[in-house]
Image (tube, rainbow, N blue to C red):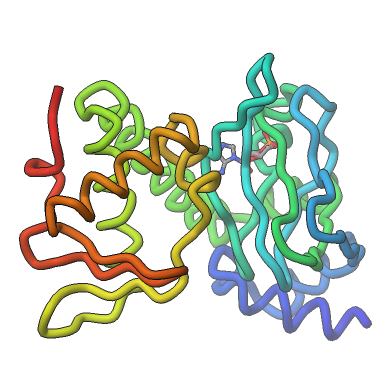
Length: 229
Ligand code: CMP
């Protein structure tokens, strides 16, 4: 069991530089847990006493408004970690983390996490690099919220998705598995209805083609041209 955990931990980028011995310290402080789709893994404002490393599945980091409207801060997948913030600053959980697929995670105790951190920079540096990456993405989102209108944000979301998951074709960038309108709305901070209007408008202007879950982003499709205030 522990050897398995060690092998899984080794695959996680923040642990890549650790020795077998350090990985064993980590593995000894680790239990495996499974979560069903939609299960709440971490609740905002709860006290935090563990770090989670995703072995399989996918989660969303999410905030809920008073009316239940959700804002998705990030989607994390196999090999990613979450729950480090409470362990580092001793504050309650900063957000909710919910499984969007059946998810398996290694749960690392606060003590094991701190033990390895104190052991040297091998793990601290990659964690800091990952936190910088997340801050960079958060800065980008703040910039998008302040500087782009809703249609611009939907366009930026689609272009980012195309860049990561899309297939380049002669007639554009093809996204085979479009997220639901609800998901896009929660990612860009608007309502599902507005996303629907934006997608229809892009389609009407010949900037995208849609059919079921498939979207084609045409070569002329760009954020600046997507419709400002
Ligand atoms: P913690 O505050 O302990 O619990 C919620 C976790 O969500 C947090 O640690 C981070 O691991 C993760 N999280 C919070 N905000 C973001 C973000 N903007 N991007 C990615 N992950 C986040």
